[in-house]
Length: 116
Length: 113
Image (cartoon, rainbow over all chains, first blue to last red; front, side, top):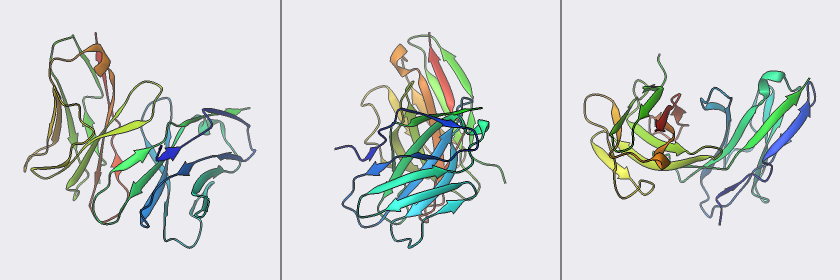
């Protein structure tokens, strides 16, 4: 079974609108962390947001928020007020276990294109 | 405070040559991870190292690939006798090992011609 599933290979959004990028995960470990990364066309991986499995509140970072639904095992990324610079690949990722080991499993990504 | 530094950013090798990719972790980080990203795909875990130790190499191909993280100096991912299928972006990440997120370098894009 896939550990991280991103079902949207590509998405379009109008500038200034909000967009939700889907991510579901599969783990039996009670302790895990969920990440979203942005990869623009230049290729670097940019960390956006993190949600721990025990965090009570949904994570937010500026225009990014993570809609964490633990029972449904989903961790969707919401980008509010989209900007042209948001056009990029977005990867959802999961770290299982606690402590120092940081093996992270990535999804296949969603390509977001913001339309002017 | 410099981030994770990878060099070179771009590397071109002919089939059969060796490729050496370097990764200097963030200051104070002793945990290094290598990932490979094939074109149009997500990142796939290759190997996890701490200083002088390989902790998990379950994602490394059995042949031609090796990694090290010596006591002094950067971590090295070494690919011997490269083939066209090795063409990919190779990312290194580092962490302090305290349960925080890993920070990624900018990647090395290997092209085998």
